[in-house]
Length: 151
Image (cartoon, rainbow, N blue to C red; front, side):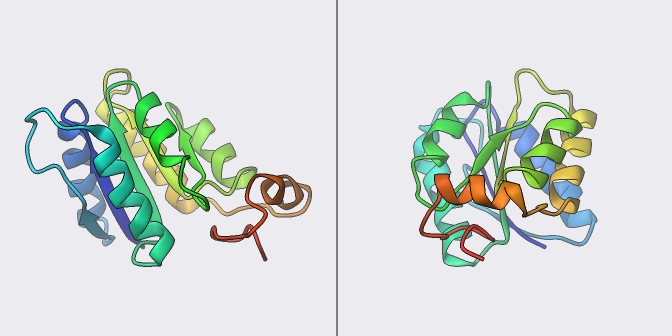
């Protein structure tokens, strides 16, 4: 799977660890930055990841900041992006099955490395259920710019 990843300075170390794990697992990862833990503005990197997902250059996105909240807010400003802050694998399960989330957001300040990897694995493996959930997703994304919203 092709994944675009980005973070702010607080999420840099966790983003790097997850990206390394993804590459080792055979995924194609495009690191949209930053390239260090120097202070940066999270909307800049959220935008790059969202553009990659919306353009089809990436199948899914990964964003990481300290709380996950800033990245979630910034990402969800993009029509066609359904970013979900997931702190546990069960949250990632529902984000995919019920919400057809196409961007995973992790909270580096609150998520242990092993839990971030488990959550990411679930997010990438799980399908969207469609059915009654598709009707609801279409109310959020009526133009269907996301993965299956317009299907």
